[in-house]
Image 1 (spheres, helix red, strand yellow):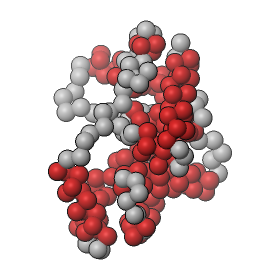
Image 2 (cartoon, rainbow, N blue to C red):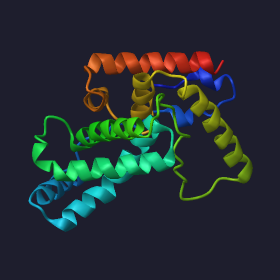
Image 3 (cartoon, helix red, strand yellow):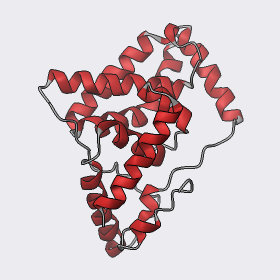
Image 4 (cartoon, rainbow, N blue to C red):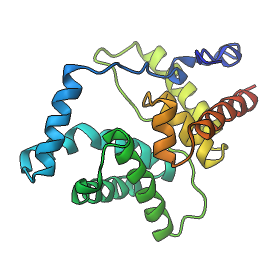
Length: 206
């Protein structure tokens, strides 16, 4: 199952491409450039801070949305998370990637917003739309939308940590180590939550 092919799902006519994790990328010149931006932001450079917001706000929003299941609340949580992260850049010591550190802040911010708004149960938001550069034909779009809705309903039935582990692995391509950092658990627990989540999804989609 490590390849995350989801053969059991494809047997039900579901487009499983939305469930395949994005392959982790090796260090690149862009990663080194990103580290430079981070250092400039730590030094208080406004342009560098704006660049961090531009790069990471979509991931922060998607993570908050997966926790809260509400677009408006997710926007509030994403804004809170970015403000908190930028204000606390000195606390980032590099023990994890900056992205992992930021997503952990996003999860905590989303939970805080949820409690503040009286939400007692975390639910899933529809899989975040990432429209391709070229639009598929209308029939294919409708099919993919139907698949996404079906998968979303199944995801909403998962326990929070399983749901987040699956979403972070599949949607955002995080490694198990990065998921562990974001969820503040061991790497082993991250793997278990992911695989249990996938197993439960298969059962729900039968």
